Length: 128
Image 1 (tube, rainbow, N blue to C red):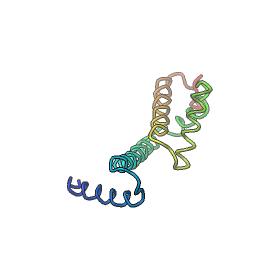
Image 2: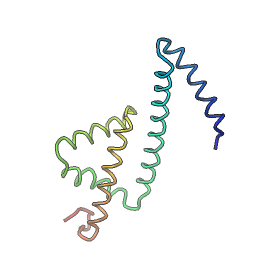
Image 3: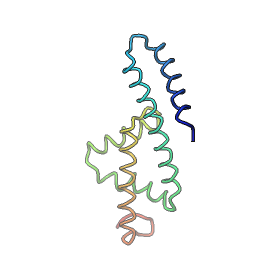
């Protein structure tokens, strides 16, 4: 793990770059922009870790099919629209932390329902 001094040095470098790019901004605004960037980087790392774990699930393809064709149909119109829009932004690398959290929450709820219905699934993995 990097030392705190390393992080402080990197933060100072970022501040120097940002203050030149946004000369009219106050130090508080610049540090706010840096914090937003760092939060976005962390959110992407968290989402990528989540996606790797989800993809490694032994029934990933069945859960994915259920998420698209079964569970999604149970959602209200507004929720469907929000989930689809968030997923599209993730695919286009323009997602916010909220978008990623919405998709992760959706997947986890879907997986939980899928696993809870394991005894009532037919041979194709669909809930009967």
